[in-house]
Length: 201
Ligand SMILES: [Zn+2]
Image 1: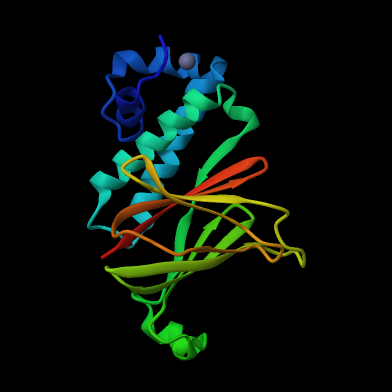
Image 2 (image 1 turned 135 degrees about the horizontal axis):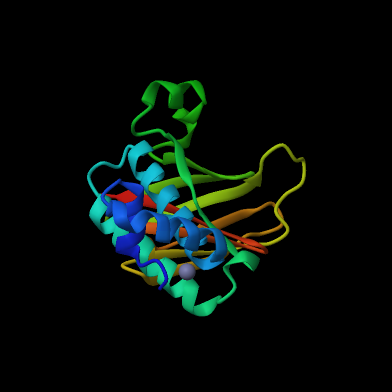
């Protein structure tokens, strides 16, 4: 028997039955899929605990769940195409002083976010408000002077794509029409998919 999401979450938050632990422990040593699934949920929980986005854990989990399931169906070999969750490391809404120090006053009313996953930073500027909102941004490999060779980006809401974009030669991209709500930004790099949560109100 493979690990279900309930099993994984129970194991991670200590609610699993003690009698089940030896079974799962030995299964996880042999089964890559279940190992990946457990890692996925562990990162998800860490991400949720760490983020400033306390208002929306439920929809976040639903979104991530939908993406994860879609990813599993499309890509049977998870090891070849890894998916990681981005952490929100900067948000000018919650760090206005730092935003000023970074010289964002010239950026008008744009909200700036930086998402980070592994060796990539994703810089986002969110312009406008509910009726007319767009996002511009850049995918930057950290510690390298080069730009990303190519990436496709998708905005996801409730597991459905609601916008797509590609990076240019400088790693820059734009979503001209952005709906409100709890969105996930999915960045498809050649061997890595990064997913980051965006709460837009
Ligand atoms: Zn398994």
